[in-house]
Amino acid sequence: MALIAATNFGLGLLVLFVLSDCTCGARGGGEFLGAAREKTDALSPAFEFPITPKPNPGQPWCEIRGKVNGNRFLYYACGNKKVEVFGPLGRNVNDIVFWERQTETLKDLAEELKKKLLDWKAADLIPSDSLSLQGRLVCVRGDNGRTSGSWEFDINEQISYFFNSESGNWTLRPRGRQIKASWESDRDLTNSLMKISVGDCNKWLERILMHWDELWETTAPPGSQQVTAQSGATALRPITWILPVILSRLIIIGIQVESFRVTDQTLRIQRRHQLPAITKP
Image 1 (cartoon, rainbow, N blue to C red):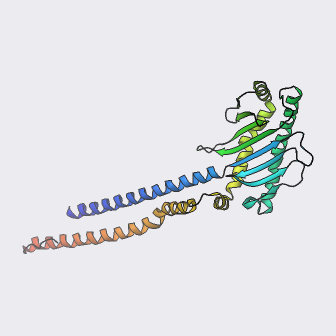
Image 2 (cartoon, one colour):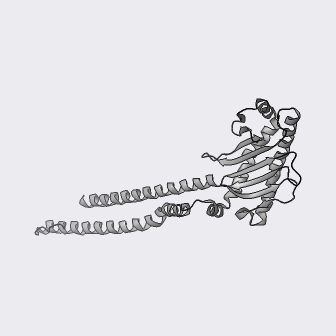
Image 3 (cartoon, rainbow, N blue to C red):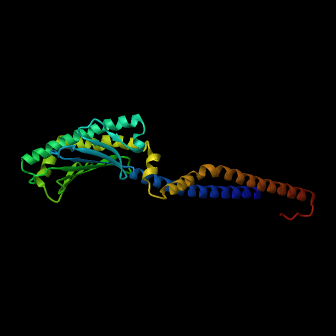
C-alpha cells in the first residue's frame, strides 16, 4: 500500500507540474497569436483612387494608390501602361504581374465612377464648377476569417458617402440625398463594390500575407519585433521543455519507487526472522 501511495503521489506531482508548464506555454502562445492578429491588422491593404473627369493638362484623370500600414506599395496613373509596385511586393516578376492584373479591377471601377460624376453634373446634382471624387477602400479580415471591404467616397471634398459591403447599405455625411438615391439605385455598381470587397480583397490579403515577415519589418513600430520574437519563443516552450522535464521527473519517481520497494522487502524479512525493526529513512 505504501508503495502504491508513493507512486501515485509522485505521478500526481508530475501531472501537476506538466499541466502548470503547459498553462504557461499556452499563455505565451496566446500572446503570440495576439501579436499575429495585430500583424494582420497592420498589413490590411488600403487603396485610394482620386478621380477628376476633366483634369488639367498633363495630369491623369485618375490615380490608384495602394498602401500597407500607410506605406505605399502600388501606384498607377490612368492612361499609362505601367503599374509601379514598390518594396517587398514588387521584388519579383510574379508579384508585379499579379498586381498589374489586379489593378484592372480598380481601373474598371474608376471608369464607372467617372461616368456617374458626369451624369450627376449634367443633372445639376453637383452645383460646383469643379468635379472630383476621392475614393478609398480598406480590405479587412474579421475574427471569423471573413474578408470585407470598407468604402468611402468624397465628392468635391465636401460630401462623403460610405458603403457597407456586409449589409449593402449606403450612408452619407452630411448632405446629398439625391446622389445617395442614385448610388442605391445603381445595382451594377453596388454589385461591383460587393464583389471587390469579398473576392478581390481576399486575394489581395492573401498575396500580401505571403510577404508577411518582409512587410512587418518595414511597417512594425519600434520594439514590436522584439516583443513578437519573445512571445514566439514562449509559445514554443512546451515543445522544447516538456519532454526533458517529464524524463527527469520519471527518473526521480523511479528512484523513489525503487527505494520504497527495497525498504518494503527489508521489512518483510524482518518480520519473517523477527529481527529488530529498521527505521525507515
